[in-house]
Image (cartoon, rainbow, N blue to C red; front, side):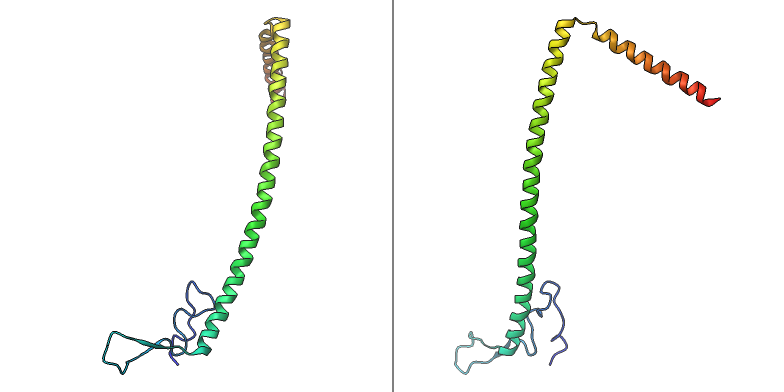
Length: 134
């Protein structure tokens, strides 16, 4: 048994990386052609590797299912958000149309009202800050 037989690989989790108890061994072939290689694989080691890989596949399947659920949830959320934004945009458009009609009907003295309101707010805050310091 080699010292690497129980070492865990960085990407395979429970499955040992490419090597089991005795690993893949080469044997010389008795034929005259030296380009052939025979491999002897221990079936017990392959079972351990397959079990480890099966566990990793199950974990990945679970992660994929969770991702699918999250994607469906976020898709529904985005569709609701799009609907809400479309309704809000239509409401703003209608309000701007009504405001423009009101401005045209009442004349352009609305700017004077806005400036007067701003000055009033400024003086209220100014006097309030003077009174609160005492």
